Amino acid sequence: MKTPREIAARAVCLGVMTFRSRFEGVRFAGDARATQEAAEMIAGVTDWLSEAGLSPSLIAVEADLLKLRPNTWVREALVAIGEAMLPESIGVLFAGLNLVSEIPPYDRGVDAEPLLRMLPFLSDSPFVTRPGMPPREEWEAMATGVTPAAAADISRGESVAGLYWWRAVSESLVRAGTLTRPQLVGILRDGEARARALEIPYVKGDFKAFGKPYATLTPEEQKAASMIAGARVRAFRWLLDDDVAWDEVPMDS
Image (cartoon, rainbow, N blue to C red; front, top):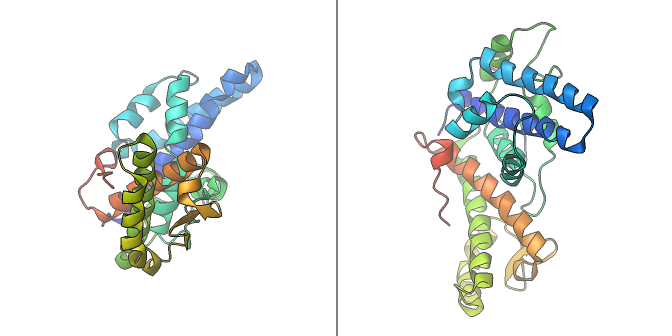
């Protein structure tokens, strides 16, 4: 399992990417004053990460994006970051540090704001204990102030996430015509005992999501559930593997 320092560093990096992407999108509204204010926020959070000594914790694509001048990210990058559901991964990482007690159900996203407010690049973070703390000191306060969750709890969380990710992928295969619905029904029936043991809710022989059987989700609901599961399972698997890099986590279902 990754160390608390590694987990905290990854959470901060994802938080910086989330925070910057919000401000990178401001210019598309056409408000010149808001765009200038956004540029200042972008420069501030990007400089903070560098001064905190966390640049080596970035993966290559993150590092490349953060090197760009403020207000230069293209729409495609913002869409990709949005669909990566980074707050879902941050929530899992925080569970691995005992900073959150519960992950929401797999048909409901996490509340991103409380998560981001814990990160030390914001002045109201609990790890920023006095005005004027240097970025490196703010980061060290977090890195040394967190504790790892029990490996068994993280392993169980990964099992739950893995099943929801499998369900998302299997549904996509059925709708694409690669897997038949009767085949999937048989797999669900055979695996129901395991799923129920992990407290995954079933209804009419299928995973329950958005209050109904997974097979009946609208395309929009299925996409949302799939993105949530994908972001969470990546984080859980990264947590459990000492060596795997964030962008090399196996996403097989």
